[in-house]
Image 1 (spheres, rainbow, N blue to C red):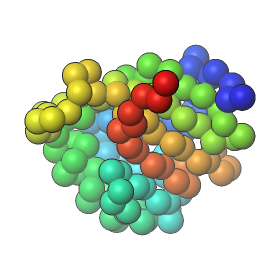
Image 2 (image 1 turned 90 degrees about the vertical axis):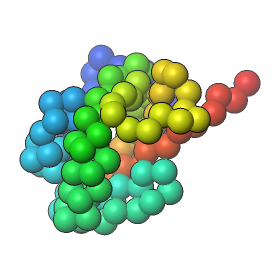
Image 3 (image 1 turned 180 degrees about the horizontal axis):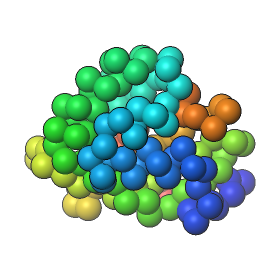
Amino acid sequence: MPKEITHALPRAVIAHLAAYSAHDPEAMIATLAPDALVNDNRREFLGHAAIRAWADKEIFGDNVTAKVERALDQYGDIIVHARVDGDYDKTGLPDPLVLTFYFSLRNEVITQLIITLNTAVA
């Protein structure tokens, strides 16, 4: 069973999501390993340069904010359900928009992040 850790997130995860809301690309990149992989909605971005280009446009360009609603530790990986808002096209998206962030960390930095919109399963 995953362990509830909503109020005890790893520092890198806290800093990563806080950087979205603070509109601070440098702080976000500092949470990632140089060769980190981000998969956002089935699109892969590998390494700081690719991740920064994606984030500049789709996170910071759209003034995205992320507020943690629930977090779990699943065998050392961190699963965060976060309410996301911003100036992006919301056509066809649920309101509120809650995305799932799957973080893998090694040596206190994020090595992999998968972001997806999940549907509830009964």
